[in-house]
Image (cartoon, rainbow over all chains, first blue to last red; front, side):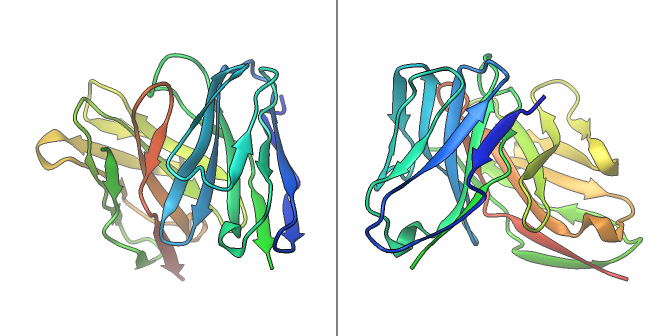
Amino acid sequence: NAGVTQTPKFQVLKTGQSMTLQCAQDMNHEYMSWYRQDPGMGLRLIHYSVGAGITDQGEVPNGYNVSRSTTEDFPLRLLSAAPSQTSVYFCASTPPGGSGNTIYFGEGSWLTVV
Amino acid sequence: AQSVTQPDIHITVSEGASLELRCNYSYGATPYLFWYVQSPGQGLQLLLKYFSGDTLVQGIKGFEAEFKRSQSSFNLRKPSVHWSDAAEYFCAVGAGYGQNFVFGPGTRLSVLP
């Protein structure tokens, strides 16, 4: 069982470049989300989706776009990368039932913007 | 708004010593509380979670946590630390619609031989 799969694991971008972080889950979870992790700040929610065709902003959405065309996939797009977006990105999915359920994380994507 | 604080940025303990990592939360309703561990260069692994009922929760790897509503705390404990426990630990509260979570800033644990 693959769980939550993120690609790429490492990426270096130049300022202004665009890229997409891919995320896929095979657990048929409706709820998916993207977090970024920065030193001393824990994980902060970027965007989330409660199901195919539905997305919403989290705490730090600026500079990022998402879409959810299928239950399985939830890509995160950086349209014009900035050094402030250097971070570790985690995709996550959660089974239905509210905030009490365990969140399943991908292994992370380390992004450096130079 | 929900928030989580972890007062200790970095803790160093000797192998075999006991451990307590502090977590305080701010949330208007009954919280769902979690502790995650992250080894260097790795993703996050769930250690334990509290939903309701018994306020002392047992987790994996010999960890436990106690929910104290009066103190808005959910401290993580382990009676005897192993060198492999060196990692960063995150406390989180389930909050808001759906399955959004608010994470604390993390506590880095170093273990001396």
